[in-house]
Figure (cartoon, rainbow, N blue to C red):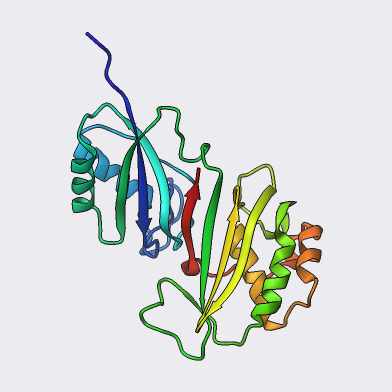
Length: 257
C-alpha cells in the first residue's frame, strides 16, 4: 500500500489573550491563575483534532504570555487528512470560541517551521494616555493617566536598535541561553490619546518587549533621565530597568518570513 500523503498546513491566527494562560500548553503541575486555565494552543489543537479525527501538534512562531494578544500569530501542523482548506477553515472557526479566529490556511512546504523559519516578529504596545480610562479598551490597552514625554521616549528608544545583549530587559524564568537579540526597528508614536510602541526583532527574551515598554514609560514620566536606556542596556542588570508593563497592552502584529 502506498504511504500516506503528509501535508504541512500554515495557519494565521488572531486572538484576545485576556482569558488564557498564554499560547503554550501548560503542564498540569503548573499553578494557573483563575480564569486563565486554558492556552491558545490547547484550544486550537483540540478543535483541529475534532475536525480532522487525528491528533496534531501545533507549532507556533513563538509563545505569547498570559494576557498578550495577537493579530498575526503563525502556526503550522502536519496531517495526513486531505480535507480541503476552505472546509477546514469554516469548520475550525465554527467551533472555536469567539476570542480566537483562524483567518488563513495555506499549504506550506514540508520543511516550513513556524518558529525556525521566521525572520522577525513585530509587536505593538498600546497605551491609553489620558485622565480617564475606557471600558471598551480595558482588555487591549494599558491605561496610564500621567503625562509622558513622547519625544524623549522616541530619542531614547533608538539606543536599542541593533544587536545587543538584552539581559537588562529579561525576566527571570526565561529559558533562552543566548541573551543576544537584534532589534530591527523600534518606534514610539502618539495618535490622539494613544501612544503606540512598535518593536521588531529577530527574537524576544522572556518579557523583553514589556520590560522595554515599562522602562520607556519611566523615561517618559521623568523617573529616568536621558541616557538612562543606554546605561541600563550596557549594565545587563534587570534591576536597573523599569517595571514590566501589563500584558494586555501587547499584541503580536506580524511574523515575517
